[in-house]
Length: 321
Image (cartoon, rainbow, N blue to C red):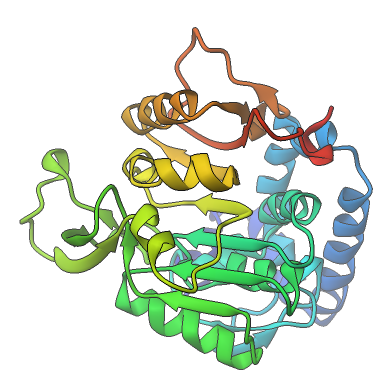
């Protein structure tokens, strides 16, 4: 049996220990999915400006422990939110992403995707990890839609494929490659947990112990292959490699004009992301700041979720505040 403190990070205060004891009780296990589903329904009907508010995100951080479904190892069925009814392979180890992505904070991001996507759309899930967002995209685009899930790290790939198999998903194609500026091979640095691996660059020492060599693909090369569908939306979460991925996607951005939801990691990545998007005629919004347009005179936050859309397209209803 795992140590609760290792996985849930529960402080040793009497209050927090009592709260966790209640959560593990029969009442806590019974009420938790009901509470989480009620919160999800409330958020689902809330205006986008409220959903993306900084205060609500902080609230999500505080309460997401109550949304964790099950600390046991094995396959668990999601009992709330937009993924309700689907199954995931749960590994109760420190920092495993299932803990975070099934919390209230991620549900708010998932509702944002619900508002952006339509049946028949095509999503490029760049940095698919174990496939929580992949499952959501698969459900939202429906049987006539398509999801391409890009993930280079073998440990994540195995869990991603297992989660797709558990749910008999047929509209997802897994691409065992990292997305970067050009196609080829590059060193990959596993992180302190399975959600924080990244491609190596000059600043993070490509030959450090534990580095792996993985295949890379640019999205422009990927799109050029026969039978590939152009993206309606690109989701990017690749731990600082966002600018390089967009550099290798310029032709795709100009041709398909997809929406982009990008998690920015670091100041350098942020400036690179903004530069490419500006040159490709994209507008940029900061999700954690109430979906306000990014100030062109200020640097992006060191970490943030951003939404971008091509100015030739109509601004999605989900972003009209």
